[in-house]
Length: 369
Image 1 (tube, one colour):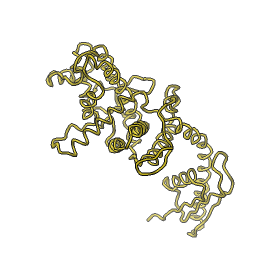
Image 2: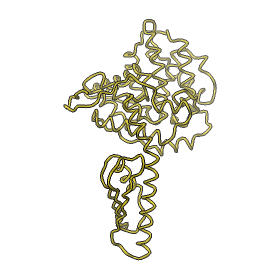
Image 3: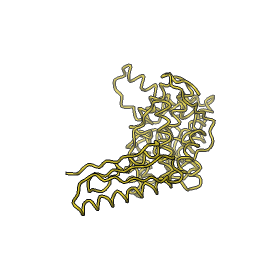
């Protein structure tokens, strides 16, 4: 146990990590939507309870829409991560351009000022057009040009690789009192990232870690790399007025990227304590899904009967049996009021309350106009 600055006692979350459920599933090719959601939910709950950090939900349907509308276009720059041709790595899909560019730069990793020294803008635009037209041109480029193209790739993404809606949570994590807290919170937030962002951050962070290890020759340690690349990865380069608030924000952004680089191999991994919680949650999921389905069918049947009879009196359905694998409680009660079908919001309410509390559950529906 340890004490936060707020005075609350919480379990210490050590990042002496085992392979995460997420990572193992991806390696075996068996990652399911339910597993991804469960991982994000467990990480999000711990962030709220242990660190007081709330994570805004990102639009999963938007990600699926990007994936479903992906074309065979050769365009590389200004395209959502989900729409780019990718190489399959052990931790997920990474755009082919980024994989090739990092491999190219590793061959010249001792180049002094890598990412700090850039080529001319006119030359970079010419190279960008060639890459967007499908030409394999990286091998003929100078290291400073390849580094400049990587920065341009991240700068022109429609959505930053660290999504805008999550950036405040990452910055808030850097305000925590100890380095251990900051690292744990930042790595837990990496578990909540969209799949494409998580894979790309893992890949670029591991690459930058390799670059930083040759800082004796290239003069680019993790602090210098963070200074140069943070505004690009978080797309905060549009700041024109450098007042005190802007400077503090830029420093926090550098701290976020520095944490990613120094802990590159932990990105997307959950601590052992939370893995055990996740396993218990996944074990309960089949029983819970079956029971919720039974409730939904019963609610629909009750409302259909009301509609047929023309009655509008409240009807109560009580399920007193105990579904195997769920926490024991006396009963689950579903109250339906009007003859309309149960909404997704109502069913979610039942599901969340049944999962998290040993209390009777009441679901009220409102008549639609």
